[in-house]
Length: 66
Image (cartoon, rainbow, N blue to C red; front, side, top):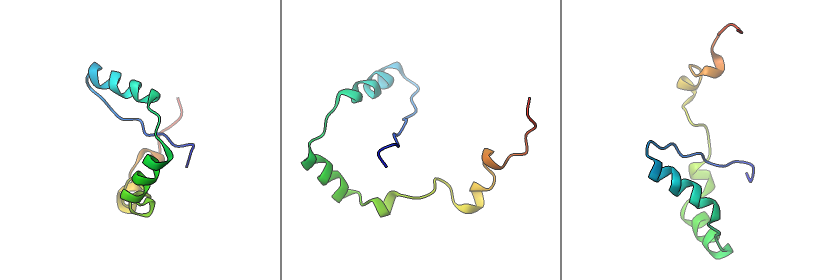
């Protein structure tokens, strides 16, 4: 959705600067259409983890409150 933005990890300042500079990139409608055609949403949408691993993530941890 329009409320989701990827946050790329980085270990070098140069890469962080490039990530920040991407805020000023503007794609045309044609470019957006080309990206959408090359990477169909149904092929990349979904959970990050398979169900068997998802159940072991922090969301299901039984950690006491501080």
